Image 1 (cartoon, rainbow, N blue to C red):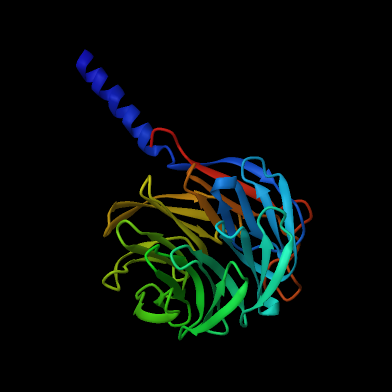
Image 2: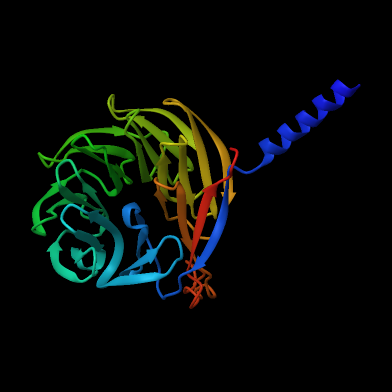
Length: 337
């Protein structure tokens, strides 16, 4: 009888452990400020976050949420790229078809570089020491010299690029939302070298990368994440995610892939093997919390959201962001998972 009780107690403890969410919101930090938002870009060595806020980029302390400064004078702020080696940051100004170069210490604007229509996401590729923008409506990528702050070339990519990643091997990858493809760019040659479909995943937007296993994760608005083997150039598996994805990340240490969704969920997918995945959580976050950033040094996930006023009379779209409600949600892995 005693052994049976022990078995039952152990089984109950196991069941409770299995029911424990994989991740939880540990802090909610009110940032405030007016305007909509877009990409959240962590700067792990300096423990700060760059957040595009419509007409500026906010720079906040990732531990406290304290505003460290702002990069101002940006019309249509979207993404930020950090080039530590040159001491420069780069922010897209989508409404002005340009990129703003700024000092990473003072946040002072140093210059403006012409890009193209709908300059949106932007990344730094350390291998080529170049910055790449992804210009949606222009169907192109602008290549920038991060030291001189000058335009090198605009690369036509054959579709509407959304987000992209650097593989660290001289290649850059981006999603094409209108054609539902992944495109590969040779960073040094500044030329498209390959492309492949993400079907059955449609409208890929968010992207993350596992460079060890050569896998790309494309979050699609059709409610799927496509996992591509970028060596062979093909999708190997798809996994269900929430609705309205806009952000993705991969934590190599835990083997977890994330998709932040406009439906107020964070889909957490575990990598069992390079071609095998399963959803371990759909964490409830906040309405419209579809942008995210991951700090791989402390494994924290950062998501932003706000409260909104009454919707427009037309019934289309959201209301204005209510003053003082823009907040940063800090999400961490539960101990013992």
